Image (cartoon, rainbow, N blue to C red; front, top):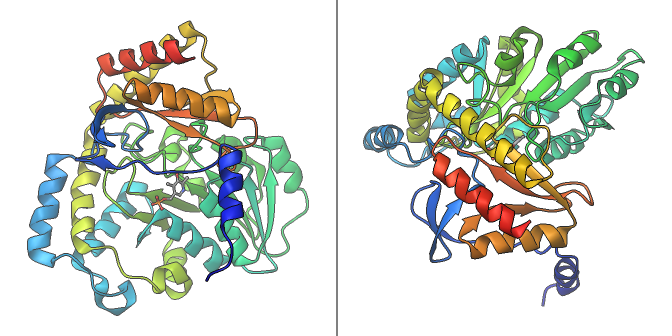
Length: 382
Ligand SMILES: *Cc1c(COP(=O)(O)O)cnc(C)c1O
């Protein structure tokens, strides 16, 4: 027999931290069948409603005819196709960078970048609330990890007082995944002297959503030129799968030489890359999706304030309702589920103790009426 695991599982249950999955049918959309019953969901990262877009799906089917399903090998062997290459060039243009490099997932992109660039004598200075993959990446690199209070530029500044003797990487999410707020990038960028230093922005939740052309937080703040390393994911607003890092020629070539999560893994299927090219065109041109999203968000915030919900300071489609204890968050999420509304309870360790919440997210595919339904249900369960 294997070693004992039950103690841990029991403890998770006792602390209301036990995680389970629900099984859903059909396409990613506001109306889905989950656990056998129809639900209205507000928990997906499909912000622009592209995950089930017919044009993207058609490109995927056509590309499968051409490329087949599997890519068969890593990018450095023979898994890199003209579809990947074209998407990389288009992402470089979209982000205004010399180059972009595709990774199989955002998690792997972060692991790859930080561990390729930094080593034991270097330092990572990260916002307290950055995504888990960035923390894991910093640990993997062996660099000294320092964290500053969330969004607190003066706390960051005090970390930057000593000049960087070895490499120093400042790391932040563009849009914070559990709070929905945007990193104060212009202030962060003003803080530091570039000697031995660089900034990495993980804009998994900003790309496609912020900025008139969906360029994310750097477009929102008009500070693209000052961000050295930009990471984005394709499984959220883009509605497909995978991730990319954009930056200088030198940066990308360094990653190709030494990012282990790039080198030692199978390339994403070429057909997914091809489908993402269609997605990128839609993201750039269909600003009406972002406008729709904005109007749903403001409808929600106005309604939620009237009910007296504890909202966070967020203008993005991530609209957490902070409730405090894990127990209360679970209770509300379950009460909503009884009303066939799907909203996830987010509990520690994903968020800090005492800040358990309902993480409500919006998609351009939602309707005003669905937002009204959500508000009425929240009023009953709050
Ligand atoms: C989702 C997410 C990731 C990971 O991206 P995947 O492609 O899902 O692996 C990384 N960073 C942030 C901020 C995210 O929200």
